[in-house]
Image 1 (cartoon, chains in turn brown, blue):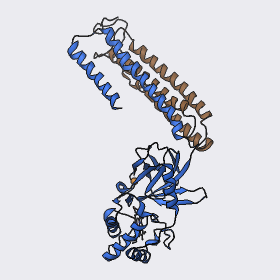
Image 2 (spheres, each protein chain N blue to C red):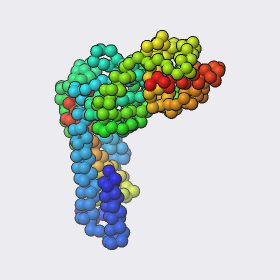
Image 3 (spheres, each protein chain N blue to C red):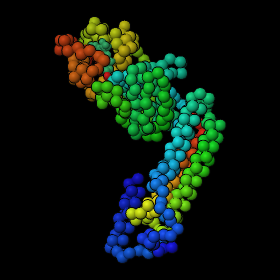
Image 4 (cartoon, helix red, strand yellow):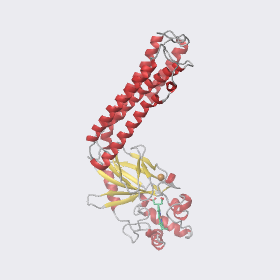
Length: 137
Length: 285
Ligand SMILES: [Cu+2]
């Protein structure tokens, strides 16, 4: 597996479709993290302004945040899994730095995986604040 | 903090020396991978998570407005501070440009602004909180040692923003009680001849339209209360020291000291009248 064989034409590979170079998957992890953050923020703000009052409890709002977090983590997990699959495509080890469509594909997958890891932790950090801060104060 | 940063610095330099001097040859793939995963992923994530949890656990206690010993209302106005100390009898003592706090009490600041956004900041005591027109924001402070600390406006609010400061004095509770009781009293009548003329000039020149000196006909509300202005540590929201010379300069050249200030300069008054005003005001201790 450690053998580099990108330079040999791989029989199984067909000409890579154009979407192989797509950057979209890369943005999913950080994108979900950002949307999760925004949703949590807006939910807490609306809850404290309209429902609980400035000294009230977060109560059900933290359940909502929990729900967002669950959905976000699953989304990021799936993105990371996709990235991992893409990274393991064919036979090659990182850093995937050959000037070929396949290596670009693997490289983007690997980056997606790493960014998903970062987004996963960051999303957890956002959710931690409602665990420890239970009020609107 | 210093010790911690020195330790981290020593560690980083030590590692750099280790790989460049002690073992300059290539390292094994396995050990390098462990170093990257352990030192680059697991270690920082663990440390940051621990620090985050520790910080988050402190927040509710810092912000709780439940068990408050005392409230103080502060309004940021271009470019000074109106400070009100509510009393047990329901009335409030209104002062300005200086805040005093009793040691060890939890104090709730209620912050507001009648004009533009200011920000209330005493760096040594607490974080900054915006003062927003039409809203009341809150800040809890619990001073843990006596001393004098500097406060400032931390949100650009116009020409004299940089000259909108104040001093915060944390006092022993007994001294604080005496101080507040004294600040609640009416102004003392001028004793020296010059100060008496100063009081007449104060009333004759319309200073009382904007300034209150409790116990006299001066009851204006546009500018700072001057009942005990002589006892303050600074002048014009700490733009000048509080002495007679500075008072003369303030009254005669207000706009030069503080650009755009909302008080007209009285430079047209004769010098001895300015001196009399300064004598009067510095007697108001
Ligand atoms: Cu300002």
